[in-house]
Amino acid sequence: MSLVTEKPVPVTDAINPPVAQSRFHKDGPLLKRLPLLPALVFMIIVTQVPFVLTLIISFFNWNSLYPNDVYFSWFSNYVAVFVNPDLRNAMLVTVQITVVVVLVSLLLGLGIALLLDRKFWGRGAVRTLLIAPFLIVPVAAALVWKHALYNPSYGLFNGILTWIWGLFGAGSQAPQPDWISQFPLHSVELELIWQWTPFMMLILLAGLQGRPLDVIEAAKMDGASEWQIFRYLTFPHLRQYLELAALLGSIYVVQTFDSVFTLTSGSLGTANLPFTIYQQFTLGHDYGGSSASGVVVVFLSIALATFALRTVSTLLKDESK
Image (tube, rainbow, N blue to C red; front, side, top):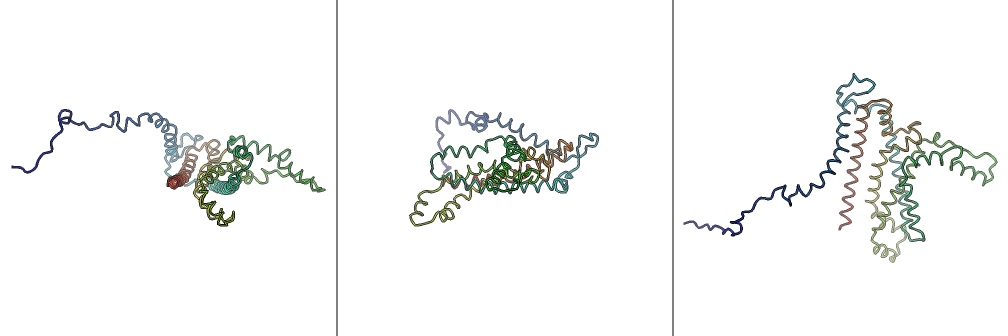
């Protein structure tokens, strides 16, 4: 006689035995994600297919001027990116522009955000005006700087120099420098700083709005100065926002093309990597080399974007606590 007792089967299960839920069931995971399929297919066609083709072409020695001399060249195009003096100089110029623009715009954005965080009459209008440079089309902004500000004959900067010279009664003629010719790289950097400072200011201003005001009020009641409040309370709170602004700014500034093309056309030592890729592709017709350079820029941007996403995720976790 067996001592094991069988568990009684419910009558409903005996009549209608349970069926394993299929992935294609109306409540299954695949059908729930089915509405996203068109967007996924579109994203793959628009972004991934061109990148895969570019990656494949980067391993070929392919110049349209020599259509009969196309062959698989392994990593020679990537070696040329770091060995070719023009490409190497373009990488150095890209790093210099990115570092200068991001750091200066970050400092200016921090100062403006601290001022806009205070209450004053017309603060909303001032915020809107300060955001405007970031909303202008990059080519249009570069054209304004090239003709309305930098022009040696009728530009605003030389007009200001003439006014200052006349204001102080200087007998000599006011200097009228050709800003783009004499300071080409600084001219590009200054225009980009003007364009990206509002972006930094917006992120840092959002961070300032999330400060614990009760802690700041307690610090003021304890006699802490404005500098001490900024150093020990505000700045540590803004650390992650500063990192996020710097990383996002670096991702976009690395890919700068409009300002270089419009202001200097890549001359006078201002050709960065995106502009050099453009020249290599359109003027040199070097499909393989330009594709390899583009892949290098993409991977640099992905590396920066990875750090940015990690910073954002850490920031969201801290805010949810």
